[in-house]
Image 1 (cartoon, rainbow, N blue to C red):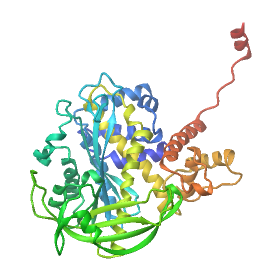
Image 2: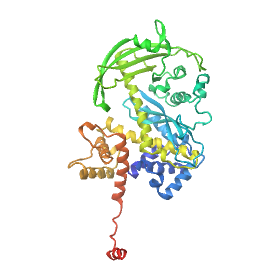
Image 3: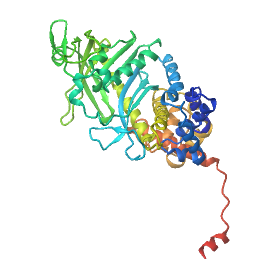
Image 4: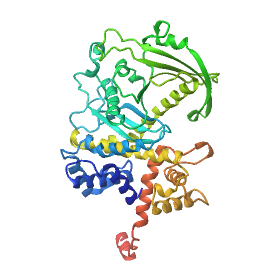
Length: 468
């Protein structure tokens, strides 16, 4: 993105945020545009000395919080959901942000079982469509653990879910219920093993909101015929069929066998629960068969409120769950690409909204990467300016190929990937997020270089004087 493209994007995501002053909204747009143009660079490098001071003043305002920073982006994300065909995937997950190196920053908490790593815990909800194209960050929850209460694992059974970190999964569901359930679409809330909570399935939710999590606990359940445990129920379930799945990361094709059955979850004993209404869920087991020797077979056991009564429905459930890796990619882009853990602010109050802004930047990098795969034949002008396309094309012609022209979105994104280190071999597929964030940063530098006025050569006499 050059200055014009970046400003248009930033104005759409931050221009109408309620910071209490229109000047602050304009400042937010300028900061976000600079950050997307120089992904991974420090704020002082991105904005310059005077710009860094303006950034510090902006994030020190009481009206600038993670909620207000995300407010405009959140509205735009919900609007994007309305234009999507099919279901919306609301993927939630937790990651830790390590700020141990910032010794002067007070209020941090432990981020692991060891107490040496200090930082902030972050739980986010990422919206995508069924093709895994990011639509936006629906919610962001930041907190610092209390070191005095850290390590209370032995007491977790006696504590209410809302008193534990597990409440974050219910918070994510509530974000969907409050903000997206009125969209005329079905939404699937997806979580990993950690989200396998009885209270999550028993919680109230809108009719168009479904749950999909990976099994962690072998719960006591009831089937149509008996009371048993979850794994025994799926062991005795009918085989719905099988299908082939291409595993790109391992360059192989896996043959998957699918089972499914319907069960009712029994309330766990000795727990403080929100309600005990025995929710009904489908259990889907996906197992790789005829696996080659030395290769670890794929195996998922999923719990969902979606119907999974036949092979087609059960396969759809498994494909939806594969979208969970999008949030892993989002967190990787935020930390490795946007370098969120390198942010340096004096207080947590300033740091938190800066993290929120970088979350929006990270999802936009992901969007550009995925958009080229699902809408690659659209004109490149939809995501770039003529100057950007001309610069990227000239770079590719100079350093990569004798002939290359940028016409479509796919052409442009591949060119960015080449600049960012993508090789483009037949086995490489399309460029990934890493090469895109590196390419965006380097392309912006190339565009800036083209705009610079040529330097006057140094006078020979001055060089001789230096040598003398």
